Length: 419
Image (cartoon, rainbow, N blue to C red; front, side):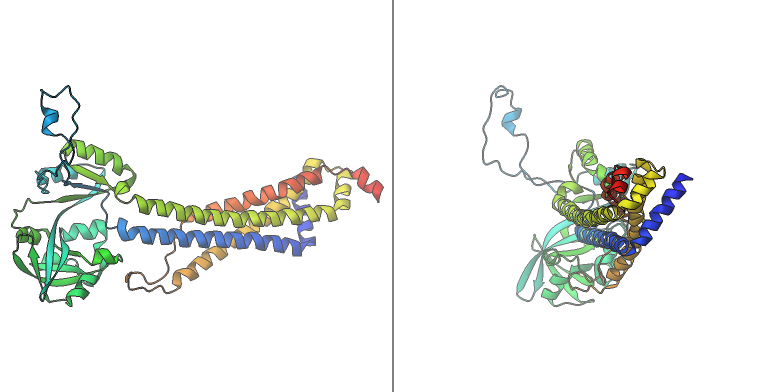
C-alpha cells in the first residue's frame, strides 16, 4: 500500500514540474541515443578495419622461417661445453622453406577438434613482365575452396570468380593495383618470370582488392598445383599451413604446442597483428568514455532539477512528514522520481539510438579502396543497448540519491514554524 502511495506522490510531483521533468528526460534520452549510435558506429568501423587484415590472416601459420641457426656447431662441441662463446655476424642457414612431411602434419591437424579448417599454401617471389619492364611481386598458390570458406576470399574479388582458379588450368588472379600497372583485363595472358629465369604464361581470371594499396600492388593468386608446376616442385611442396580455430583466443597457446610437436615455426594471429588489436581497443575505450561522459552530464542535470524541486516543495515535504511519512519514505519518493526520469528517458534513448544507427547504416559510403563496402558500418550489438539502459538507471539513481537524502532530513517543525 505504501509503495503505491509513494509512486502516486512521485507521479504527481513529476507532472507538477513537467517542464523540468521533460528537460531532464531529454538529457538522458540524448545521452543514451549518442552512446548507442557512437558505440555502434565505432565498433562497426573497428570490425571493418580489422577484417581488412584479420579476415585474410590465419589464426595460426605454420612455416619454415629463414633465420640463423639457434645452435651453432661450437655450442655442440664437448671441448668447449664449459666455456662461454661469443659469436658475431651469424649467417642465415641455407634452409628450405618447404614444410617437410606436410601431408602428415595436415592429416594430424584435421583430427584436432579445436581446429575449424586448414588451408595449405605455396608462396614464391616472381616477376611480372610488361614490355621491357618487369615488376617484382608475389604469387600465392592457394586452395580456392578452402580460402573461400575460411578467409572470405570471394569478398575481395571485384572482377571474375575465385573458383575459376580451380576450374581453369594455368590461371591467375591479380591485385587491382598490379593489374592496372600491367594494363590487363579478364581473359588476358600474364607472363611471369620465376627466380630461376623461367617464363610462364597464365590466364587472368579475376581481380583482387583488399583495400591495402601496398598489398594489392604486389600480390597475385593461383592454384597450388599451378605454382608447384611453375616452381618445378612436386605435389607435396607446401610453404605455409594456415589454420583457423574455433576459439581465436587459444591461438598463442596452440601455436607453441604445434611448434613443439611438429618442430616447425608457428605464428599466432595476436603476434602477427598486435597493432590492429591495440587500435581497436583504444577506439572502443574512447567510444565508451564519450558515451559515459554524456550520461554523467545528464546526471548532473537531474541532480540540479531535483535540488530545485526539493527547495520549492519544502512545504509539501513538511506536510508529508507531519502526516506520518518517515524520512525513508520521502527519500524513496525522490528516488522514484529520479529513476522514473532515467527509465523513460533511457527507453526513448534506446529507440532513438537504434533509429539513428539505422540512418547511419543507410548513408552511402563508397571508396575505391573498399569496393565491397557500400554504406557506413554499424554494429547492432544487443550488449550496447543493455549497457546503455543499465547505466541510465545507475546514473539517475546516484543523481537522485543525494537530493533525496537531503529531503529525508528536512524537519517539518522548522518548516511549518517558519511559515
